[in-house]
Amino acid sequence: MTLRVLFVDDNQKVLNSIARQFEGVLDYETANGPHEAIELLDPENPFAVVVSDMRMPKMNGAELLTHVRKVSPETVRIMLSGYADLQATIQAVNEGNIARFLSKPCPRELLERAIREGLDQYQLVTGQRELLEGTLQGSVTVLCAILSLVHPLAFGRVSQVQRIALAIGDQMQLESIWDLKIASMLFPLGCVSLSERALECMLEGIPVPSEERSAYEQHPSVARAMLQEIPRLDNVAAIVAYQEKGFDGSGLPIDEIAGTDIPIGARVLKAALDFEIAMKQTSDATTALEKLLQSPAGYDPEVLDALRQQIEAGFCQRSQRTVPLAELRTGMVLAADVRLEGGKLVAASGQEVTDSIRRNLETFCEFGQIEGSFEIESVGGAENAECEAVC
Image 1 (cartoon, rainbow, N blue to C red):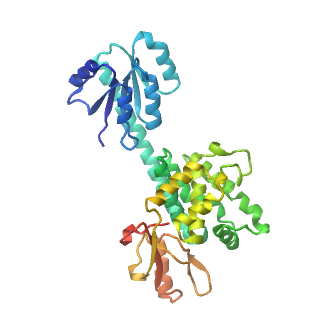
Image 2 (tube, helix red, strand yellow):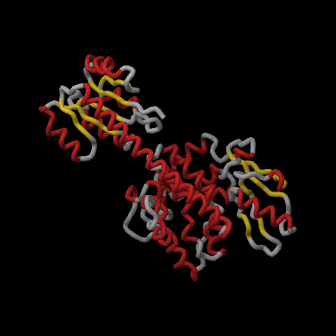
Image 3 (cartoon, helix red, strand yellow):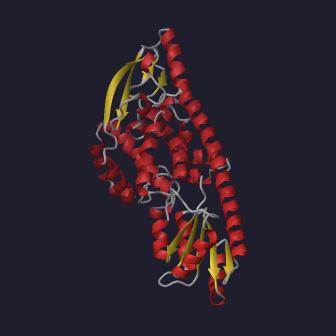
């Protein structure tokens, strides 16, 4: 990956001088003023280092670098400041918006060394994050695969709910998309102790039996307690804890948190969970959304608007077909429960086929405990097995 540097100054002569000094030395771009710099910022392709002058019209360097931090938090931000701007620069450093400041005029060697150190810091931070997130995600994927075998009714929803949640998150351009991705895999963690009847009530959107109501009400908190013990999953734990919290403060957990005080990931997950249930009941995305809109106080309006835009773009257009075991592929999604002759559930409708699930189904077929054909569903016009979706 190429590490890019952005130089920002409202004086074109200064930018021309920088171009002469660093041509062929750094991969850089220049921006004549803060507004031009903002247009170049892209969270999907961030700059490793941004170097900005302090004194610029309409928006000073400190304000610009504060904005840079919001768009790409890992970008190393360097300020070039004259003595007259010293107090404002110190304040910006103390507030955490600037990693380093250099006095003007700044010798070329000092500026290049600061940039090189910034590039090293960026590589270190992003490398550690990618390693940690990759390791965690791999562990979570294995955990979910095991739990989906042991408790298919609870974890059979994961693939559909995750697809819905990530579609909403992408539409909203959420910065915390990794946390949402993991939370939408682990949200049923607290449900593993609930009975099959209680889970069926949850999936059908009807009240849980009174004798299990207490256990049901605790499931988000139980999941949170488990996840808080794992490093780096604090945000995920908070999302899972508030997965059933209405935007108006209703729902679980019973506390004073409401509105935008609820983690944004939890607001998205709440809508995804309820939309998934509504889709099972109606089999039509527009009708399912209308069901959510009948209780508008329970949802963040921005989340529902993002979901609406995804639906209008063709999200969740679905079709079903039957495939024999020989054509069943990893990544396909079951459109009907698979049960043994005695009624035991081995794979739930909506569950994504994994290697483990497929091997289980092969074994049951060999012993004649299940039939050798399966209903699967495709979403969004998928044409082949690798594109089978999970809504």
